[in-house]
Length: 213
Image (cartoon, rainbow, N blue to C red; front, side):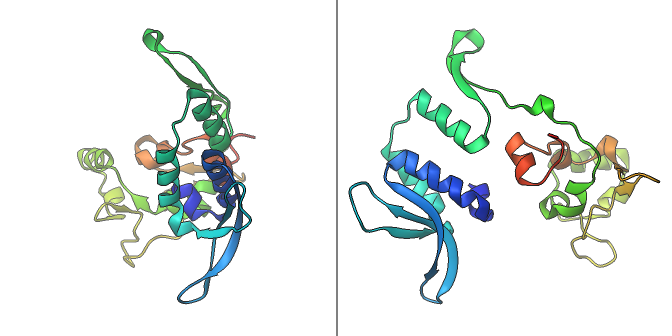
């Protein structure tokens, strides 16, 4: 849901998912919403066999999906279609461990290769300003990495020890001489948040990662 709410480019996808679940026609759009008359992004929705349409702003997306899923019983094929629609990768029904029927997903993550462009550490705010996992904090204390811990405030990273404010780029990123590549100065003990990036092919493409070529 965070994708749908935080990225206006995803409103079109939300409209397709919502139409698939409840029928009718949904399209992305904007509308002035009371009481302040502020323009919000969202979707226009027209139920089947009706002429009138209604606008739902992105704040209502959670409730819309919750209601849509509660009204429809999804088959395995429905789930496969939704997965393909949302994540842009192939999925199919098949037998898994112990011959239990489920859904196989071709994540395509084997194609991902970091090209050390530095994009995530330079340009993605939520990549270098987020919250450290407990396992990271414990490991850094055990390793005596007080240099790293000095950039953490209440579990939040990365916070400048000089200003107490969020940094504007990852403090551990280093540009390699005479190249357009970067390296991480704490690569061997970097946060789990960084190790897990990108979480999926869609995540990579949506955030501008060039690791899929």
